[in-house]
Image (tube, rainbow, N blue to C red; front, side):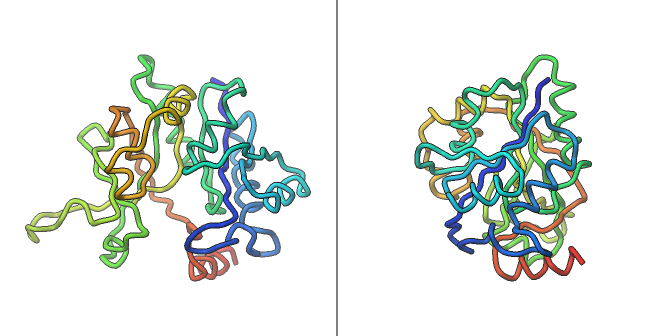
Length: 242
């Protein structure tokens, strides 16, 4: 299989504008993420896909590969689909631009899903990590996921799922990490499927796949890292980097 990675990168993030250009130990967050993705040695190619001249020039000036989006897009999947349409590949891995601690072990687990899927029943795969702190579980910025017995996603939500009505049940909660591996066709299909009300309500793009019957295989990891959504996250990342 030919496997490539695409890193969607917007400059105007709603919660932390310009976060991808913030300094993290002497380099910008987006360059750190790009270099970490390259360093996994899992991909035939790695590209940053962006609508920003600032981010495009940042990657190019640091010796990387970047693609400028032609059209406006509502989601990272749409942006990647446009970029990948004319690229020869089998699997596309979406690494979020604010994930500078991207590492090989977790990505390998995701890619193994496709190597074992001879019938091609899995449309995409993603990562989840167990969370125990109730503040994080109840935080709407943390996307939670529930799965069936075969680890296929049932639903994603910003609310705590499942709701702990019975306090005696040993409930496990999982945070969805924003790394996806798509079959190329599943990604192209995404762009022609209209948004439905569940995705519109939660503002979680992978819900669209579930609403249209796509299969999402979830892989558990113990590596959490730091997703940089806020200035506080950036400070945490700086401490962790040291």
